Length: 221
Image (tube, rainbow, N blue to C red; front, side, top):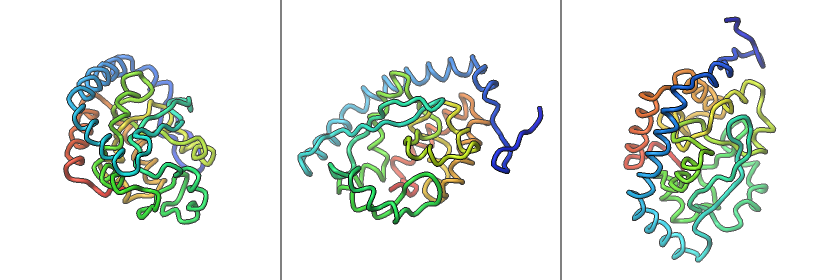
């Protein structure tokens, strides 16, 4: 197969070949459905405790939804436990100059918008649990690249857009390896490596490593 170059970088992903992985995609979807249903049932006490803690802190909404872009840049509404102050989106514009990572995403270790409860839930990745609903309805998968915001994708190069060839995930190779220790370019590289190596056993391995991170955080903020 001829290797094409985009943005002076090798194009790693064959989108047509990925779409034709019917057996893998079938079993991946079955895993998503079964695991998300079990997760929603088993983790229901955690949902209750986190919900009560969020409500007790500032009486604001428990859940937070945001439009993200999924496979093929298709927009969908992603759900999370609210980990920031109610008007966090309005305050973002003033903080963009303090972005601590290079590239098309925003990260700030001491983000003043994060609540006390939110700091704990983000550290242990508990704020992501409501995304099991996104997995159940098919907007997301358990494992895959994180879904970006539309404003972030505007700044993507053609090389970066390769991470949108597959369905986004609640967790992924980036989260269980480097996470916040790499910049945007490093995250894209890890996402593309995941897509190239993806398979049921690799997905299960990432899920198991994610469970470990919940109890032993690896630098999330």
